[in-house]
Length: 178
Image (tube, rainbow, N blue to C red; front, side, top):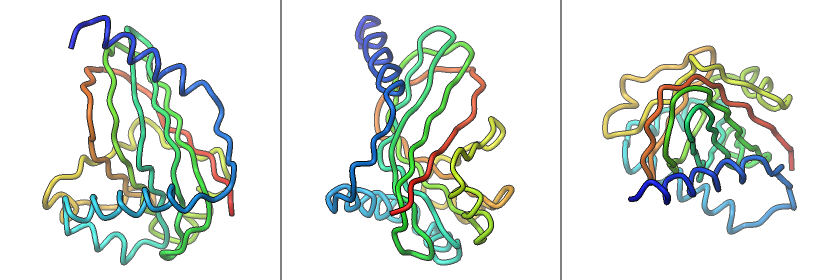
């Protein structure tokens, strides 16, 4: 991939993140995409089933797009929030990174909430995960040794792209109930 294409892709990702999310209502095809993402995580690591069984709730982000150029980058994606296995709303994820970085990447992410109060904190809106709350990249067997940190467990599954970075940033989430 030539440098011009990488820069163009990263610029498109960053511009897309600047646009605000509009929740236009429920679309069953979009929710099916979330269910496909759940199945993909479970297929990649069957040990993740324990998190689905024991978590009070979880947020599924089927497509998160991340990009960066020089010292600025970010990520953006939309997802679905479940409480005890039942769909209750939509969410968006936004991330801004500062530090050396170049490239673009797409990934899926699932955040598990251990208890009702952990999910309630998320549902209040403007929820943030700091830079120290890092996602565990899903591979076979990784969930077996994973634990909650401050009531959440975060798993990511890379889909495509290549990103080189040494940046610091946090994730911010919004929530809209159905």
